Image (spheres, helix red, strand yellow):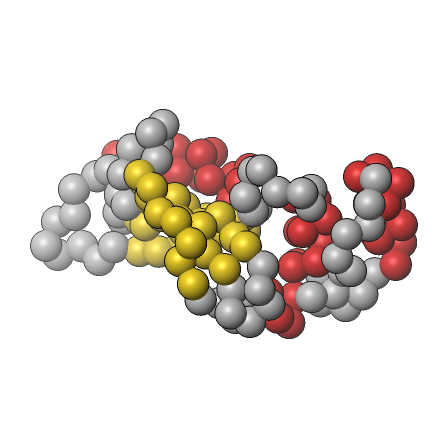
Length: 132
């Protein structure tokens, strides 16, 4: 895995945004890492939660985890959201199909070609996607 860039997020507290290139498939990913807002007691373990569709779900999930942690419902949790760069030529939906489908799915590829204008990468790349 190659780290391309890393910046502190300006709109979500305790969050870094990291752009990485996978050494397994060469694709670019946008990863957000959010540290807990609730202080960690020495006796508490910090948990981790990994979510896909991070470009769409990161904010909602981080807010939910922080609210539950403030109420004492969950321990402090680091949230890692894996998504796609927002300024890419390949629409996120096509990249998602490529990365999250375990086998090639032609109806999905035809659908994305009609709705996104370009089929982009084939579906069925899950086996290669998460080996950063």
